[in-house]
Length: 117
Length: 112
Image (cartoon, rainbow over all chains, first blue to last red):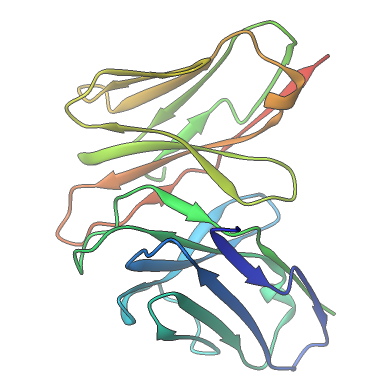
């Protein structure tokens, strides 16, 4: 069984549209993350949730809104997509149970390649 | 420069040779982790080394940590074509707000 899964794997859309990416982990982890990887492979954290609570919000435009309905799911909704949003988005999870600590091994999903035209 | 920076940016070797990648960081850390990313895939955790450890092994992988120099190295021995991937170090800084920070990665090509 896949530990961290994301859907869709590929997403091609027009500028100005709204889209969502879903993430689920079946590892029983308390903490989940969203990362953005640009064309130069630089991986930047966007959000972190611990037990459905937002912990990290790294100066991401408010067009990006994460939602965690339960601790196994962390979805990412993006409004008014822009060309610069094109990237690969990775979901990850870790066992970190302490609210302000996220230093454990992270398990990554396969990524969602978003292309904004 | 940023926390967790790998060196070199790209490395090309022949199958069977050893590959060494280095990571430097700036602040004190709880631990340092190495990840591998195959093309088109997510990152896969390789090794976690804690700040009180100096060396760790896992199969053909050897990681060292020198906290006085704020640096770590990843050695892959007897490389294989399947080791071709990007390798990232991730540091978990000791701050009041702990989070893992990834470096820009080293792209390793192993030529058969």
